[in-house]
Length: 171
Image (cartoon, rainbow, N blue to C red; front, side, top):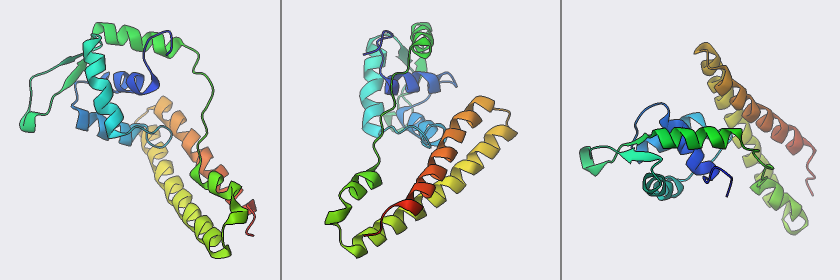
């Protein structure tokens, strides 16, 4: 674990809680809205990290709401830990692309499997590119240059994936 003592998922939750108290479901929605184009988090990760963050004093629990939803708020210790995490070396990227993995075994695919794989990948990246471009436009309109910059990474990623798919062997 990093010097700050938190993993990237926990740090992302602390970062999102700077916007104000949120329940686990609200944190998932915020993560989807803000981070999903370049960072994935699962519901199980969120709900696993929140009690740990509370136990360590980085977040505090609010009063239960409807359907026993539990809001969390970042504490001063959580803000200090998040600041420490921001200052750390982020380490190396981890690349996990399920399409590239399947193409690595392309010689074991049928021609129709490869055709379908490329078609679905093209469709996904085309739709994702359009969606993230819209997010960039909205972030810029709202004056959030940092969010826009992070989202530009996702734009470049989807453009690169589409460009790469054009050159991938078809069998």
